[in-house]
Length: 310
Image 1 (cartoon, one colour):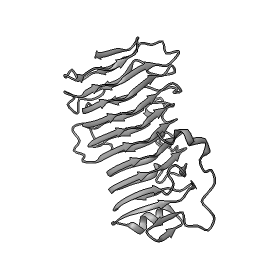
Image 2 (cartoon, rainbow, N blue to C red):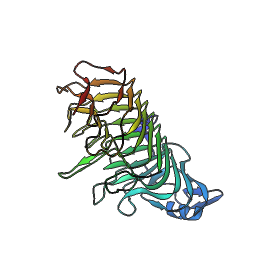
Image 3 (cartoon, helix red, strand yellow):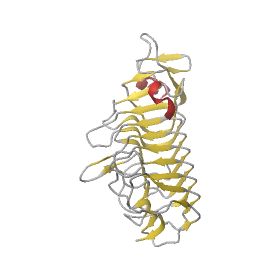
Image 4 (spheres, one colour):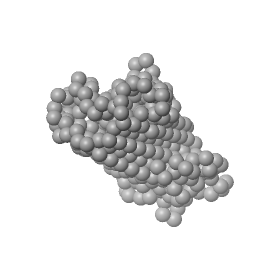
């Protein structure tokens, strides 16, 4: 969220000619993939100099931190590895800190800044802009319980201008199939289709975020837990926009499959309002699970119903 106010003053030129923009320890590299390969199956930090980079990388080993030397000035755009994302991660662990990803579109309409196929992921102080997806994580699996230990944590980040819908499916700002998903102190705004957060994961923690759909177009739910989940959704602020494909549900639980239990899912201390021009009266929480959710006190504007069961 802290970068939203400086978006128009970011660096727009490439890294200085002749410099080594990617540094591991005392050694510099001309490409991000070379820096990743240098760490290999070890553990290391890649320091990324200010610049706009049309590069991508695949991490298959080790524990790597990708860190901007000046947060908010290292921008990766458009170039997707494996026709997937700017960073394709399938290793032990990754940490992305202070980077910007923008302008990703690929053949299957799931172009993302980050695709985390396996291994834990921590994202901090980063931005995801004007792409089909911001972060997509986990692996598509058959129906039935998934034993996935992957943990994805996203904090202090911004997601803007993301999502896209086709006749058969939609892309989203965040779409994860993981063991646990933690999303906190982040901003979601101006979606272009799909949901802001869609999680196929048994345990969630979604706290202290802002969802401003005022500038959104063709968007759907703020939070979708299509196979159920336990955990907490608390301390968030939601503004329901006026130009939505689905304006009836702000948070949806188990709308597709009965994969995970939802009893005890806490939804409390959130604030919900309607943007000017929004005439549909939505339900804040819509539940298909028929289980006992823990829906507590939430401050909702007139016209928003707290809870509905389907």
